[in-house]
Amino acid sequence: MKYDLRLGVNIDHVATIRNARGGIHPDPVHAAKLAETAGADGITAHLREDRRHISDDDITRLMDRLAVPLNLEMAATEEMLEIALRHNPHAACIVPEKREERTTEGGLDAAGGLKQLQPYVAALGDAGIRVSLFIEPDIKQLEAAVTLGAPVIELHTGAYCEASGPDQERQFKRLADAAQAAQDLGLECHAGHGLTFDTVAAIAAIDTIRELNIGHFLIGEAIFGGLDSSIKRMRALMDKARAERSA
Image 1 (cartoon, helix red, strand yellow):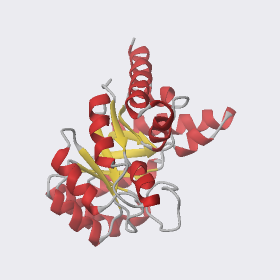
Image 2 (cartoon, rainbow, N blue to C red):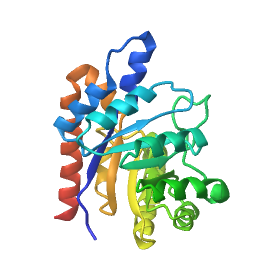
Image 3 (tube, helix red, strand yellow):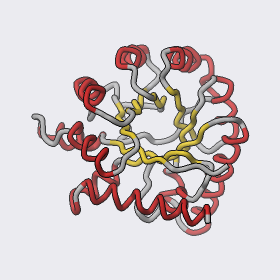
């Protein structure tokens, strides 16, 4: 089955710039509203335990002001569960989190953490929040998502984006095979991490992927040409790749 492809824009690193100096500028909520206008189908924000970028107040304001769905990235902790249940976003993506990492370094080990993850997936699902797991393109992780009852998985595309030559081809095949396996298992498949103008087309052409979540690159490009321009260009590249795949 072929699907339209949604774009989720991650606004975390607008908050990173704000927090580098303190104060209120630039405002990630303003960035989220601009992203809506530019064609984003949803907004992603990662509320980290150390609050290095997105803040609690940002989540409150996003929930109040967004017209498109909010996808809250979160670690599987009691604190983050309480916050998610209080705000009731459209979606919550459970991600691995280490305080010393600069960004999320890899996928969640759902297969090795079934017992620990189960109550979080269940509580979020019971609240009507769409649960996704950010995982590596590995069949064991996909099967673990099914066991946990998570309806959505997001494939970590970092290894593909960082590779070149034959290794990039191998990483792409892992992603394509995992996306097909996800569909066969009844999971909705998303993908993201490290995608750029140069790497997005091949991933967008995998017609079993329903959504791409992209952030850091778009915020970086916005410095040179504006956020509206960077999102519209990414949207156009995604749509072109999907249309050519469907033709």
